[in-house]
Length: 493
Image (tube, rainbow, N blue to C red; front, top):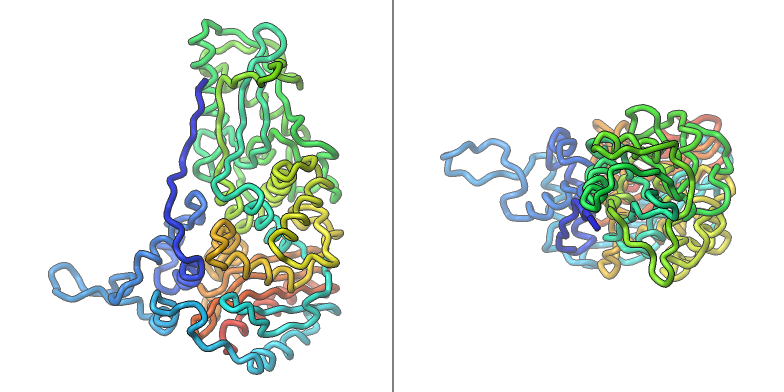
């Protein structure tokens, strides 16, 4: 058996609040080129965070002038000192003065009245260090959250599986002589490309190489190929129907069922992702000297009696922490639905939309989050039946910032950074006071717009916020209004 475990070296978990606050200002302390070069994911911990944590010193984190041999110490980035002094290691939780709630309310109320936000709007702002509610309006009202429900999916998956868990895709002997079976485990990072677009993750290329090696070692050079995607149950089609934003939800899918070279965003998907993955695997085996007769067919592995059949080869997904970060940064619906089903499996529920809904609700309740009035009809937020409150989202974000909950930290590190990454690359960018300080998950459906995340305020405190709206006249105006609200949280204290 060949079992390749790729690509994740552990790093120490330091204080969550320090890392999160520090990472939020990394965009101000470093150039945008440096942030882009670091990449959004590094096996569950962003490189920008690690670099920022290492840079805490009296000399700052970057050299902005003194050359070799000058005898001068490196100086801190000129754009950052006012913030860095407040959030460095010398400031312990609870020491800084809490933001003035009255001033925040005065700033937010007129912005919430903007007609561009529609006829329904709710808000919640919480100090993650103390749990103090700084502002709320309808914070317990259940609203359709759109993609901000991915914060819920992320927290539930991390609580159920842990950040280091990786999903297996295996090749095992089939029931018929000379048959092998490709068994899907639900890995959303599985790829048939030579180089994984998400870094370390499940690779059909590596799996084929290991399988071919194992077969040749056993004296076999001709096989038939079956595939097993039975791990998931219930409808594979999302209730939204055929939609370029999501593939069929199956336990065996390569490259999210994308027929082109795209790695995110809407594109028409394959009609049979499981079979297409098996066909890609057949080609890879053929390229490695294994003759595969016939067309891949859906089948079951050989019965193993009391013990399951030993795999010929195995490939492992990106760790759950990395999957969460990729999901949140790019608002990846396919990863979201996969993580919801993995949460169901870890909770003893069927790996279906219904099973995932029950499992996610149970995990949130176990975290101590008030789920009254909530519904988690899917993991991605494409389903309008989803219902969450602004208070639930800020409650989860505060949990993720708690040093006693290090397993939840990727909920925050995966959020896009305003002006820099993912779905916030072009929002609160440039001269906005929230650039680099704001991390948030966006949410957009027709008439529904939301924004929820964290921001470092002017006193260096990490605040969690959520704004949920409905019946907006159009997305462009609503997004601009939401960005103003988030920027106000950063500055009105």
